[in-house]
Image (cartoon, rainbow, N blue to C red; front, side, top):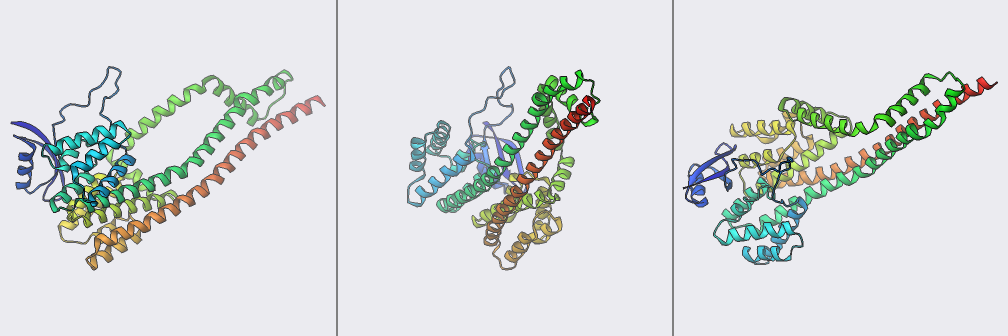
Length: 406
């Protein structure tokens, strides 16, 4: 008998984890199904953390990036749709990939599939590469025999998520560069330009204005202790993240972020687009609503959204509609809630969720453009005001020197 670790969804739609002793993974699969559970992943038990070097670094096998996962999913969808069997499709991916980690993962999955394991079970041995949502949809597709259409839906899901993430990251590049340029310019003025005038003021005994004295002290401090700022910021960031990740505080922070004037609507649109896309994709793939909500909960990081999903799950078990609970939570935009209610009333929840996802992805892009349009001039104005303040302080000191000369 061998001990296996498993992740499954129970009859109440809750994600459960545990270990079982059995002769093979197939036996574990049979036991879980007899209990009414939906297996998500079966593999070797993880009693120990990943191997660590003496310096504290963690040795981990390389995982697929989301862009790589989207690419191989699209290729699998194309090949399976063209009538290729899964073994030939996996071999093609393993042989043609230019990245070593993709080849290793595909070769490992193909080897386990050739040994008789199900595709989702083989992929489950690489949890860092294939998320639970992915494994759950592949498992459902293998049960119904609709693997090719499911891969097409997964590819579309991953590509849409990647496009939305890339839009956010690309939009933030210019404001980030502008902010760094502003910080660099002000630091240069305080540590290089301003000290050139300091001897002139001190040698002539000029009574410097308070603003000029403050700037000189700031420049001296930056020149002397400025290198300590990055480590201090790093420590404060790590401490802040550790505090924020505590459940009660994290929930308050996430709710506060959603209530912000400009960034809040953007976060809400992104949350709505992701929730609706996941819900629609899972329902269209034949996943029950409770199981779909459990999978979405695992893929969600915003604590306010998780609380709303938990409430929706409990009410769904009692027979209440999804839209009513989400509306009461006041986390997701009213547009998405209205479309989900319409889908429930017409028995078209999956298609309506996908339509809602398309709408909120477009609204998210508009919100990003609006945020960038506000950030760039705001940063420019703040930088101009700071530089003007430094220059005016120098001019005041020069005028004091001129008065002394007269």
